[in-house]
Image (cartoon, rainbow, N blue to C red):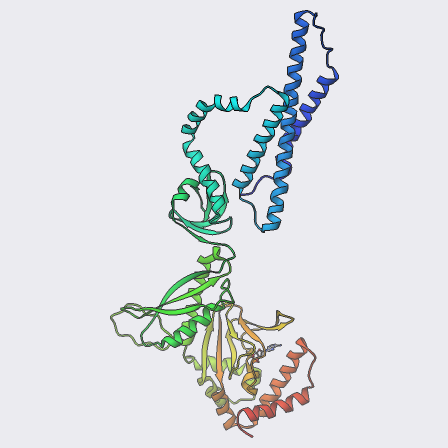
Length: 478
Ligand code: CMP
């Protein structure tokens, strides 16, 4: 909850200070002379009335000034608190501070103006009133004291996610009466402090590595080692999943329809766990599809289905796509068809990493649908050096040289790529050895163009010759 700003808080007390200050000035300026003892009663009465008016205006002036000082002090002290602790002080703490300061200031002002005033007598005289008020304000006082003990105990702070009394949400404020929670449906729930003090509270502190568990299953024929690996890699890349905590994937049980798994992952911002759970499930679906894994679902019918992430189906469409790729332009129609039959289609979700710099890799990819970003790290920051679209290719450097991947390649939208492996290319080279040279030239040309964007352009001739030798070596021709 946002507190009103200092200017608004101070405007009324400052106005009072001005009004009472002016009144006090006028009273002092036009002060009547003190009447002698022998003066008539009316004159003495009028002077006593004047003295009372001056005292009351003075009390009002000092109390208004005390309000200004207490509010300004409150602001200053809790500004220092925020700077030191890094979070806003609970409003209950601020209110208690202000209340204590006001009561002390008013007591001091009254004592200074009315020397005969006895607080002891005042307190004992009001004992009965206290009992009556105590009974009437039982719940309110219960909330106040429960609020004070909550502050002392500090089980949670503003910004933490808590689950209490059947409600789950982010703590918005803790006041002397209640804790305000904003649920994930954007509703506000107010829970009385005394009720909270009696409940079981689950706290997920902000800034803590809070974990979530998402369940899924797979058919019995899918290898658990493969399932665990595929899901762990898919989940660790999700947005809002802590990078430094590797997700844990494990088998929960052997169900009637398949193997039940769970994936435990840690979040950067726990307040967004609903979206992150959903993203994790989405990524698992895509990863399953690519890896040819299958979710288990109850069925009593025997079904035959082509494996989801397996070989690409429509060869004509794929041949057409490959024929539009410039490095394959020297290939004949027959060679293109042979190549099409040996490609595999892979689908990636938006934001998924297709290739990671530094990984080893022995296949290249042609973008069949969608868009990918090529990113390299420069001075610890990721830079997009190129965006590739349908008909573009990537991953050729590792395929043709056997060197590690030179960049990250990330799907910008849902992207389908055609994967061409080492064996398929080797088969092509076996039937047409001239291809090594022509392909190497095309790639060298492209590499020269690409590296000009990142660093200095290499010597194209020299690059091409070196590349041909590297490719020949890698494919075992020399
Ligand atoms: P490879 O090194 O196997 O894996 C990462 C791929 O990113 C790389 O092959 C190229 O296909 C591609 N790549 C690297 N740098 C660039 C660039 N500057 N522009 C376009 N693609 C690139």
